[in-house]
Amino acid sequence: MTVDFGRTASDYAQFRAGFPESFFDRMGMLGIGRAGQQVIDLGTGTGTLARGFARRGATVTGIDPAAPLLEQAKQMDAHAGVQVAYQIGWAEKTGLPDQSADVVTAGQSWHWFDGNAAAREVHRLLKPGGYAVIAHFDWIPLKGNLVEATENLIMNHNPDWKKYSGTSGLYPIWLRHLGENGFDGLETFSYDVFVPYTPEGWRGRIRASTGVGASLAPEQVDAFDRDLAALLNKHFPQPMLHVHHRIWAVVAVR
Image 1 (cartoon, rainbow, N blue to C red):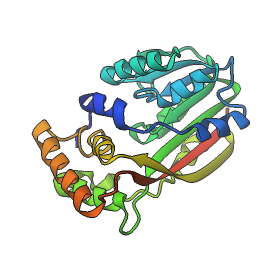
Image 2 (image 1 turned 90 degrees about the vertical axis):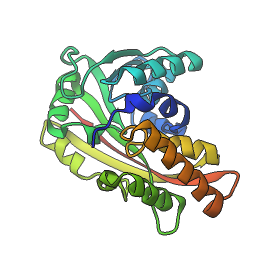
Image 3 (image 1 turned 135 degrees about the vertical axis):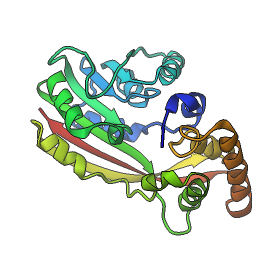
Image 4 (image 1 turned 45 degrees about the horizontal axis):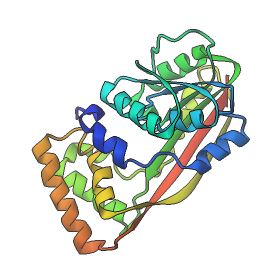
């Protein structure tokens, strides 16, 4: 399955919920993303992590291979009144100087990387004692809930997406990537939140997903969207949908 989030950059920027304030509060308690720190955010997309740390006074560089997402990130930064330096690049080979960061983060992106190569690059970028942070913010499918019904519909329209479905929101293999490439002091945490979406907002969020807007042809996306609208109207007719999500993160020290 060929995935290109640049194809769905507008929906991605408008409808994908970024990491909540509670995540940045927890990072701050760990000494991460504070004012004056140099932060590099890998796979930054529309800059959800980059912008959050910039709001707290960090100097942030965002790296992503998708130029349309970076353009959306710049517009969102301007609206938020923050500045982030963005450049096109890849997590495994950023081209940035050795030991140039206090913190390197990857939010909702590590699964797209070569994990060991990316961990080696993060190690190169960090100053001794610097922090690596891998974080995810996933919807959680449970029997009978909206997420399960939505995932089943995605698979009806895009069977190749099946390997991405049914996540628990936990990623223990990534601890191995860090542990085998020069990091220690690994610490993980997770907690659940319910994200409010209008029905129209949830449709936009799903159009901006891997299995729909980032991989299907435009006419297929339209067909899926019609079916999702019908599913919501029939089975989840509430004016506000509270969608189960899980935040998971690992923090490690170089």
